[in-house]
Length: 126
View 1 (cartoon, one colour):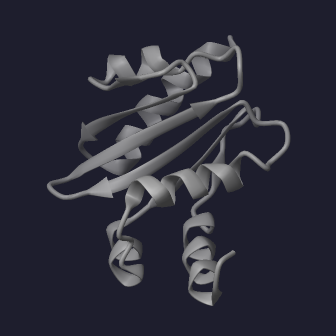
View 2 (cartoon, helix red, strand yellow):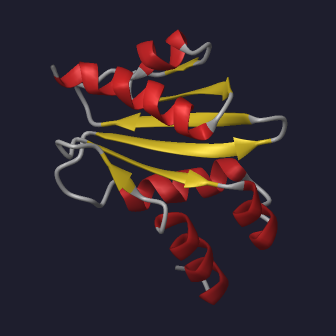
């Protein structure tokens, strides 16, 4: 961590960490209030750092970050290990990107968005 404020920021973000029932998927949420409290100037930089930390967790293959945006929308950022293509899921929700790094923006309720996205990701492991 760069400074005590960074430590506080990441502790708030990582307090939202969740996993699926068979521990292949891990995700967390960056809420507006966290962004505002810490004046996150660049979400791209912050999300890269968040993924760097998430990827230190052992035994997971897919990493998701749900970032709250204005107007009841969320950016869903996907990262995966080599050999697991999550780009089709991002495209399914109107986004795109690379096989192991992609994103989409979805409008709606966070709980429903997480349920729908995670259900699609879980299909990769069936």
